[in-house]
Image 1: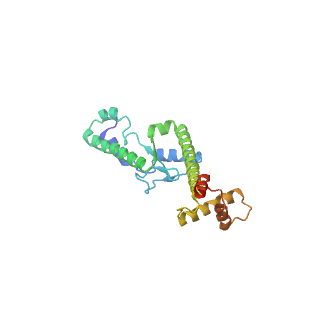
Image 2: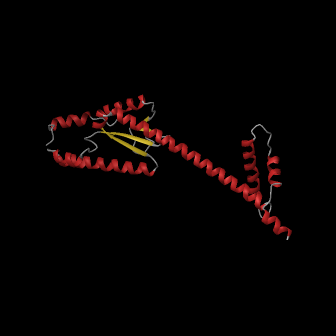
Image 3: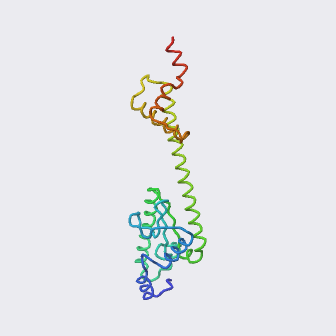
Length: 220
């Protein structure tokens, strides 16, 4: 049976707030104390998370035990009077949370949900976990940047190498200009104090070592 009388349950529901709840305030302060910055109830993020960090694509929800169906299989048997009403309402809430999680993950967001009772009992551990997770996301983002930079450099090096092998044999003019541009970039990185013009880069490519096989083929 529900531990609250119908009148007590009614007043409890009326007093419930969708935003700025006690657990949200508690969690928000704990995250802030860890040096974390966030947006509250950002409507631009699907599902309007209680806290969101758009830079790292992290959505955080502070879920009330009753409203979001904690231990629902057990709790549903204790609804008592007007059980059909609460059953339908809780099922909708659970389904909505599932759809929100699914949509956010499809958009590349990490979703963190914490129960009301856990926030009250383990706020320090939860805040610490979120901070560690943010650090993990930072590292992954940095690794991604390094990887993309390495791929971009490899692509540029491949184009220059391809030009040096082919020279003007069927090499499009637009790609030749791009090869000259990339060559200048590499030279500038290696000799930042030197005056490296596009002409210098072009001359370097022009007089660069040709492909030995091609040179031999031309002589024959």
